[in-house]
Length: 380
Image (cartoon, rainbow, N blue to C red):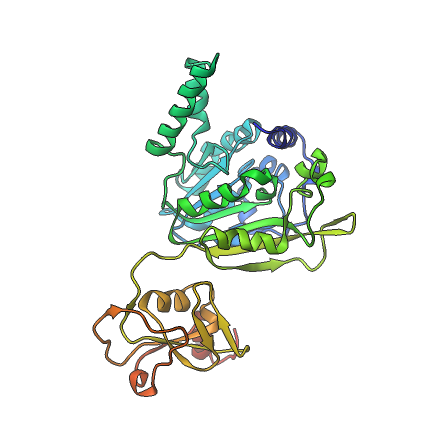
Protein backbone atom coordinates (compact mmCIF):
# COMPACT_ATOMS: atom_id res chain seq x y z
CA UNK A 1 0.00 0.00 0.00
CA UNK A 2 1.35 3.43 -0.97
CA UNK A 3 1.81 6.34 1.43
CA UNK A 4 -0.97 8.18 -0.45
CA UNK A 5 -3.42 5.34 0.24
CA UNK A 6 -2.37 5.13 3.90
CA UNK A 7 -2.91 8.88 4.40
CA UNK A 8 -6.31 8.81 2.70
CA UNK A 9 -7.50 5.76 4.64
CA UNK A 10 -6.38 7.24 7.95
CA UNK A 11 -8.19 10.53 7.32
CA UNK A 12 -11.43 8.89 6.17
CA UNK A 13 -11.30 6.37 9.01
CA UNK A 14 -11.31 9.37 11.33
CA UNK A 15 -14.15 10.88 9.28
CA UNK A 16 -16.26 7.77 9.93
CA UNK A 17 -16.17 8.47 13.67
CA UNK A 18 -16.16 12.28 13.71
CA UNK A 19 -17.37 14.63 10.98
CA UNK A 20 -14.59 16.40 9.04
CA UNK A 21 -15.91 19.70 7.71
CA UNK A 22 -12.78 20.35 5.63
CA UNK A 23 -13.56 17.33 3.43
CA UNK A 24 -16.85 18.76 2.16
CA UNK A 25 -17.89 21.00 -0.70
CA UNK A 26 -21.30 22.68 -0.38
CA UNK A 27 -23.74 20.38 -2.23
CA UNK A 28 -27.50 20.56 -2.65
CA UNK A 29 -28.96 17.06 -2.51
CA UNK A 30 -32.52 15.99 -3.27
CA UNK A 31 -33.99 16.32 0.21
CA UNK A 32 -36.70 13.75 -0.53
CA UNK A 33 -34.01 11.08 -0.96
CA UNK A 34 -32.42 11.98 2.38
CA UNK A 35 -35.57 11.60 4.48
CA UNK A 36 -35.27 7.86 5.11
CA UNK A 37 -31.48 7.90 5.66
CA UNK A 38 -30.04 7.59 9.19
CA UNK A 39 -28.69 10.96 10.33
CA UNK A 40 -25.27 9.46 11.08
CA UNK A 41 -24.81 8.52 7.42
CA UNK A 42 -25.89 11.98 6.28
CA UNK A 43 -23.54 13.70 8.73
CA UNK A 44 -20.49 11.57 7.90
CA UNK A 45 -20.68 11.87 4.13
CA UNK A 46 -17.97 13.73 2.20
CA UNK A 47 -18.38 14.78 -1.40
CA UNK A 48 -18.51 17.55 -3.98
CA UNK A 49 -21.63 16.69 -6.00
CA UNK A 50 -24.71 14.52 -6.36
CA UNK A 51 -24.21 11.78 -8.98
CA UNK A 52 -27.47 10.10 -7.89
CA UNK A 53 -29.38 12.44 -10.22
CA UNK A 54 -28.04 10.49 -13.22
CA UNK A 55 -29.60 7.18 -12.13
CA UNK A 56 -32.49 5.63 -14.05
CA UNK A 57 -34.94 2.95 -12.98
CA UNK A 58 -33.61 -0.59 -13.32
CA UNK A 59 -29.94 0.42 -13.35
CA UNK A 60 -27.17 -1.66 -11.83
CA UNK A 61 -25.12 1.13 -10.23
CA UNK A 62 -21.54 0.96 -8.98
CA UNK A 63 -20.46 3.67 -6.53
CA UNK A 64 -16.67 4.01 -6.31
CA UNK A 65 -15.47 5.11 -2.87
CA UNK A 66 -18.91 4.68 -1.37
CA UNK A 67 -17.85 5.71 2.13
CA UNK A 68 -20.68 5.59 4.67
CA UNK A 69 -23.21 4.69 1.97
CA UNK A 70 -25.16 7.94 1.59
CA UNK A 71 -25.15 8.06 -2.22
CA UNK A 72 -25.77 4.29 -2.40
CA UNK A 73 -28.87 4.53 -0.23
CA UNK A 74 -30.10 7.57 -2.16
CA UNK A 75 -29.53 5.74 -5.44
CA UNK A 76 -31.31 2.62 -4.18
CA UNK A 77 -34.54 4.63 -4.03
CA UNK A 78 -34.19 5.49 -7.72
CA UNK A 79 -33.23 2.13 -9.28
CA UNK A 80 -36.44 0.46 -8.11
CA UNK A 81 -36.98 -3.14 -7.14
CA UNK A 82 -35.34 -4.47 -10.32
CA UNK A 83 -32.21 -2.35 -9.90
CA UNK A 84 -29.17 -2.92 -7.73
CA UNK A 85 -26.50 -0.76 -6.08
CA UNK A 86 -22.93 -1.82 -5.26
CA UNK A 87 -20.64 0.31 -3.12
CA UNK A 88 -16.87 -0.26 -3.15
CA UNK A 89 -14.62 1.23 -0.49
CA UNK A 90 -11.30 0.39 1.14
CA UNK A 91 -11.75 1.94 4.60
CA UNK A 92 -13.02 -0.53 7.20
CA UNK A 93 -14.57 2.17 9.38
CA UNK A 94 -16.58 3.57 6.46
CA UNK A 95 -17.71 0.09 5.41
CA UNK A 96 -18.77 -0.64 9.00
CA UNK A 97 -20.83 2.56 9.03
CA UNK A 98 -22.53 1.73 5.72
CA UNK A 99 -23.25 -1.90 6.65
CA UNK A 100 -24.52 -0.98 10.12
CA UNK A 101 -27.77 0.26 8.59
CA UNK A 102 -28.26 -2.29 5.80
CA UNK A 103 -31.07 -4.22 7.49
CA UNK A 104 -32.86 -1.02 8.49
CA UNK A 105 -32.55 0.43 5.00
CA UNK A 106 -33.66 -2.83 3.34
CA UNK A 107 -36.85 -2.69 5.40
CA UNK A 108 -37.46 0.92 4.37
CA UNK A 109 -36.70 0.22 0.71
CA UNK A 110 -38.82 -2.91 0.57
CA UNK A 111 -35.88 -5.10 -0.41
CA UNK A 112 -32.16 -5.59 0.06
CA UNK A 113 -30.84 -4.00 -3.16
CA UNK A 114 -27.60 -2.49 -1.77
CA UNK A 115 -24.34 -4.27 -1.03
CA UNK A 116 -20.95 -2.99 0.07
CA UNK A 117 -17.66 -4.58 -0.97
CA UNK A 118 -14.11 -3.98 0.21
CA UNK A 119 -11.76 -3.18 -2.63
CA UNK A 120 -9.45 -0.72 -4.33
CA UNK A 121 -11.34 1.33 -6.89
CA UNK A 122 -8.32 1.13 -9.23
CA UNK A 123 -8.41 -2.69 -9.06
CA UNK A 124 -12.06 -3.73 -9.23
CA UNK A 125 -11.11 -7.34 -9.90
CA UNK A 126 -9.44 -7.88 -6.52
CA UNK A 127 -11.73 -8.91 -3.64
CA UNK A 128 -9.84 -7.52 -0.65
CA UNK A 129 -11.97 -9.37 1.94
CA UNK A 130 -11.09 -12.63 0.19
CA UNK A 131 -7.43 -11.63 0.01
CA UNK A 132 -7.32 -10.85 3.72
CA UNK A 133 -8.89 -14.25 4.49
CA UNK A 134 -6.24 -15.89 2.29
CA UNK A 135 -3.46 -14.02 4.12
CA UNK A 136 -4.88 -15.07 7.47
CA UNK A 137 -4.48 -18.69 6.42
CA UNK A 138 -1.32 -18.17 4.34
CA UNK A 139 0.91 -15.47 5.86
CA UNK A 140 3.70 -14.07 3.71
CA UNK A 141 7.12 -14.81 5.24
CA UNK A 142 9.39 -14.99 2.21
CA UNK A 143 9.65 -14.52 -1.53
CA UNK A 144 8.05 -17.86 -2.29
CA UNK A 145 5.00 -16.94 -0.19
CA UNK A 146 4.79 -13.59 -1.98
CA UNK A 147 4.83 -15.32 -5.36
CA UNK A 148 2.02 -17.62 -4.23
CA UNK A 149 0.02 -14.57 -3.14
CA UNK A 150 0.54 -12.88 -6.51
CA UNK A 151 -0.60 -16.05 -8.29
CA UNK A 152 -3.65 -16.28 -6.01
CA UNK A 153 -4.59 -12.65 -6.76
CA UNK A 154 -4.30 -13.20 -10.50
CA UNK A 155 -6.47 -16.31 -10.28
CA UNK A 156 -9.01 -14.53 -8.07
CA UNK A 157 -9.32 -11.58 -10.47
CA UNK A 158 -9.84 -13.98 -13.38
CA UNK A 159 -12.28 -16.45 -11.82
CA UNK A 160 -14.03 -14.53 -9.02
CA UNK A 161 -13.63 -10.79 -9.69
CA UNK A 162 -14.98 -8.34 -7.16
CA UNK A 163 -16.89 -6.65 -10.00
CA UNK A 164 -17.43 -8.70 -13.16
CA UNK A 165 -16.72 -7.33 -16.63
CA UNK A 166 -19.68 -5.87 -18.55
CA UNK A 167 -21.95 -6.06 -15.51
CA UNK A 168 -22.78 -2.44 -14.61
CA UNK A 169 -25.10 0.14 -16.23
CA UNK A 170 -23.82 3.25 -14.44
CA UNK A 171 -20.59 4.01 -12.58
CA UNK A 172 -20.80 6.94 -10.18
CA UNK A 173 -18.36 8.46 -7.71
CA UNK A 174 -18.42 11.45 -5.41
CA UNK A 175 -15.07 13.21 -4.96
CA UNK A 176 -12.93 10.06 -4.78
CA UNK A 177 -11.00 9.62 -8.03
CA UNK A 178 -8.67 12.49 -7.07
CA UNK A 179 -7.55 10.47 -4.02
CA UNK A 180 -6.00 7.72 -6.16
CA UNK A 181 -2.23 7.84 -6.68
CA UNK A 182 -1.13 9.24 -10.05
CA UNK A 183 0.53 5.96 -11.05
CA UNK A 184 -2.79 4.09 -10.73
CA UNK A 185 -5.11 6.53 -12.49
CA UNK A 186 -5.16 5.14 -16.00
CA UNK A 187 -5.72 1.65 -14.58
CA UNK A 188 -8.60 3.11 -12.53
CA UNK A 189 -10.33 4.47 -15.62
CA UNK A 190 -9.65 1.31 -17.61
CA UNK A 191 -11.28 -0.67 -14.78
CA UNK A 192 -14.36 1.57 -15.00
CA UNK A 193 -14.46 0.81 -18.73
CA UNK A 194 -14.09 -2.94 -18.09
CA UNK A 195 -16.98 -3.31 -15.65
CA UNK A 196 -19.46 -1.24 -17.68
CA UNK A 197 -21.76 -2.93 -20.14
CA UNK A 198 -21.57 -1.67 -23.75
CA UNK A 199 -23.68 1.48 -23.72
CA UNK A 200 -23.04 1.92 -19.98
CA UNK A 201 -22.62 5.40 -18.56
CA UNK A 202 -20.33 7.30 -16.22
CA UNK A 203 -21.29 10.17 -13.90
CA UNK A 204 -18.29 11.25 -11.82
CA UNK A 205 -18.48 14.16 -9.38
CA UNK A 206 -14.94 15.27 -8.61
CA UNK A 207 -12.57 18.19 -8.04
CA UNK A 208 -10.45 19.42 -10.94
CA UNK A 209 -7.74 22.09 -11.17
CA UNK A 210 -7.35 24.75 -13.84
CA UNK A 211 -3.56 24.28 -13.92
CA UNK A 212 -1.11 21.49 -13.22
CA UNK A 213 -0.58 20.95 -9.50
CA UNK A 214 3.17 21.22 -8.69
CA UNK A 215 5.01 18.40 -6.98
CA UNK A 216 5.46 20.27 -3.69
CA UNK A 217 1.67 20.52 -3.32
CA UNK A 218 1.14 16.90 -4.40
CA UNK A 219 3.51 15.82 -1.63
CA UNK A 220 1.42 17.56 1.04
CA UNK A 221 -0.59 14.71 2.64
CA UNK A 222 -3.25 17.04 4.06
CA UNK A 223 -3.88 18.70 0.71
CA UNK A 224 -3.99 15.33 -1.04
CA UNK A 225 -6.36 13.62 1.40
CA UNK A 226 -8.41 16.83 1.41
CA UNK A 227 -9.24 16.32 -2.30
CA UNK A 228 -7.06 19.21 -3.50
CA UNK A 229 -3.52 18.43 -4.59
CA UNK A 230 -4.55 15.15 -6.25
CA UNK A 231 -7.09 16.90 -8.47
CA UNK A 232 -7.10 16.08 -12.19
CA UNK A 233 -6.23 19.00 -14.46
CA UNK A 234 -9.42 20.02 -16.27
CA UNK A 235 -8.41 18.95 -19.81
CA UNK A 236 -6.48 15.87 -18.70
CA UNK A 237 -9.52 14.55 -16.84
CA UNK A 238 -11.47 14.45 -20.12
CA UNK A 239 -8.54 13.03 -22.08
CA UNK A 240 -8.00 10.17 -19.63
CA UNK A 241 -11.51 8.86 -20.35
CA UNK A 242 -11.07 9.31 -24.09
CA UNK A 243 -7.80 7.37 -23.93
CA UNK A 244 -9.58 4.50 -22.17
CA UNK A 245 -12.08 4.21 -25.04
CA UNK A 246 -15.06 6.22 -23.80
CA UNK A 247 -17.14 8.43 -26.10
CA UNK A 248 -19.46 11.40 -25.51
CA UNK A 249 -17.03 12.57 -22.82
CA UNK A 250 -17.84 15.96 -21.37
CA UNK A 251 -18.66 18.08 -18.34
CA UNK A 252 -22.32 18.25 -17.39
CA UNK A 253 -21.72 20.42 -14.33
CA UNK A 254 -19.02 23.07 -13.90
CA UNK A 255 -19.04 25.23 -10.80
CA UNK A 256 -18.35 28.81 -11.86
CA UNK A 257 -16.80 29.65 -8.51
CA UNK A 258 -13.81 27.60 -7.32
CA UNK A 259 -14.18 25.63 -4.13
CA UNK A 260 -10.69 26.66 -3.03
CA UNK A 261 -7.68 28.51 -4.45
CA UNK A 262 -4.20 27.34 -3.46
CA UNK A 263 -1.08 29.08 -4.84
CA UNK A 264 -3.33 30.77 -7.43
CA UNK A 265 -4.56 27.38 -8.72
CA UNK A 266 -8.36 27.15 -8.83
CA UNK A 267 -9.97 23.92 -7.62
CA UNK A 268 -13.64 23.44 -8.53
CA UNK A 269 -16.34 20.79 -8.55
CA UNK A 270 -17.48 19.21 -11.82
CA UNK A 271 -19.50 16.24 -13.05
CA UNK A 272 -17.89 14.28 -15.88
CA UNK A 273 -20.15 12.24 -18.16
CA UNK A 274 -19.03 9.50 -20.55
CA UNK A 275 -20.39 6.44 -22.36
CA UNK A 276 -18.84 3.07 -23.15
CA UNK A 277 -19.55 2.54 -26.86
CA UNK A 278 -21.67 -0.34 -28.07
CA UNK A 279 -19.84 -3.17 -29.82
CA UNK A 280 -22.52 -4.15 -32.34
CA UNK A 281 -21.72 -4.03 -36.06
CA UNK A 282 -22.47 -0.80 -37.91
CA UNK A 283 -25.40 -1.65 -40.22
CA UNK A 284 -27.00 0.73 -42.72
CA UNK A 285 -30.81 0.55 -43.09
CA UNK A 286 -31.21 4.03 -44.58
CA UNK A 287 -31.40 6.17 -41.43
CA UNK A 288 -30.25 9.78 -41.08
CA UNK A 289 -29.83 12.36 -38.32
CA UNK A 290 -30.14 16.13 -38.50
CA UNK A 291 -27.98 18.23 -36.21
CA UNK A 292 -30.22 21.11 -35.10
CA UNK A 293 -27.48 23.66 -34.28
CA UNK A 294 -26.58 26.24 -33.04
CA UNK A 295 -23.03 25.52 -34.32
CA UNK A 296 -22.11 25.20 -37.99
CA UNK A 297 -21.15 21.56 -37.43
CA UNK A 298 -20.08 19.13 -34.71
CA UNK A 299 -17.85 16.05 -34.72
CA UNK A 300 -18.20 13.12 -32.34
CA UNK A 301 -15.45 11.01 -30.75
CA UNK A 302 -15.72 8.37 -33.49
CA UNK A 303 -15.01 10.85 -36.30
CA UNK A 304 -18.59 11.37 -37.54
CA UNK A 305 -19.27 14.92 -38.77
CA UNK A 306 -22.71 16.53 -38.55
CA UNK A 307 -23.16 19.83 -40.45
CA UNK A 308 -26.08 21.86 -39.17
CA UNK A 309 -29.40 21.09 -40.89
CA UNK A 310 -28.11 18.28 -43.14
CA UNK A 311 -29.63 14.79 -43.26
CA UNK A 312 -26.45 12.85 -42.46
CA UNK A 313 -26.29 9.12 -43.16
CA UNK A 314 -25.60 7.04 -40.06
CA UNK A 315 -25.55 3.37 -39.15
CA UNK A 316 -28.25 1.87 -36.95
CA UNK A 317 -25.99 1.87 -33.86
CA UNK A 318 -25.07 5.55 -34.19
CA UNK A 319 -28.71 6.42 -34.91
CA UNK A 320 -29.84 4.80 -31.65
CA UNK A 321 -27.06 6.50 -29.69
CA UNK A 322 -27.84 9.99 -31.01
CA UNK A 323 -31.63 9.67 -30.62
CA UNK A 324 -31.67 7.87 -27.25
CA UNK A 325 -28.37 8.87 -25.63
CA UNK A 326 -27.21 11.87 -23.63
CA UNK A 327 -27.24 14.26 -26.62
CA UNK A 328 -30.64 13.34 -28.03
CA UNK A 329 -31.94 16.91 -27.70
CA UNK A 330 -29.34 18.06 -30.26
CA UNK A 331 -30.49 15.76 -33.07
CA UNK A 332 -33.56 14.77 -35.05
CA UNK A 333 -33.57 11.15 -36.16
CA UNK A 334 -35.11 10.32 -39.53
CA UNK A 335 -36.10 6.76 -40.37
CA UNK A 336 -36.55 5.80 -44.03
CA UNK A 337 -40.11 5.32 -45.23
CA UNK A 338 -39.15 1.76 -46.17
CA UNK A 339 -36.04 0.36 -44.43
CA UNK A 340 -33.59 -1.08 -46.90
CA UNK A 341 -31.85 -4.43 -46.36
CA UNK A 342 -29.14 -4.04 -43.72
CA UNK A 343 -25.63 -3.79 -45.11
CA UNK A 344 -22.31 -3.02 -43.42
CA UNK A 345 -22.01 0.74 -43.14
CA UNK A 346 -19.06 2.28 -44.94
CA UNK A 347 -20.25 5.76 -46.02
CA UNK A 348 -17.61 8.48 -45.51
CA UNK A 349 -18.14 10.85 -42.59
CA UNK A 350 -20.55 13.63 -43.50
CA UNK A 351 -22.39 11.68 -46.25
CA UNK A 352 -25.79 13.26 -46.88
CA UNK A 353 -28.98 11.23 -47.41
CA UNK A 354 -31.12 12.58 -50.24
CA UNK A 355 -34.57 13.95 -49.49
CA UNK A 356 -36.01 11.19 -51.68
CA UNK A 357 -34.39 8.51 -49.49
CA UNK A 358 -35.80 9.88 -46.25
CA UNK A 359 -39.05 11.67 -47.21
CA UNK A 360 -42.07 10.16 -45.52
CA UNK A 361 -40.06 8.36 -42.89
CA UNK A 362 -40.87 8.76 -39.21
CA UNK A 363 -38.94 11.44 -37.37
CA UNK A 364 -37.67 11.12 -33.82
CA UNK A 365 -37.22 14.20 -31.66
CA UNK A 366 -36.06 14.46 -28.06
CA UNK A 367 -38.42 13.73 -25.19
CA UNK A 368 -38.43 17.41 -24.22
CA UNK A 369 -39.62 18.41 -27.70
CA UNK A 370 -42.32 15.77 -27.69
CA UNK A 371 -43.50 17.10 -24.34
CA UNK A 372 -43.57 20.65 -25.68
CA UNK A 373 -45.47 19.66 -28.80
CA UNK A 374 -48.07 17.74 -26.84
CA UNK A 375 -48.66 20.55 -24.36
CA UNK A 376 -48.27 23.43 -26.77
CA UNK A 377 -46.26 25.29 -24.19
CA UNK A 378 -43.05 25.94 -26.10
CA UNK A 379 -39.81 24.77 -24.52
CA UNK A 380 -40.32 22.57 -21.45
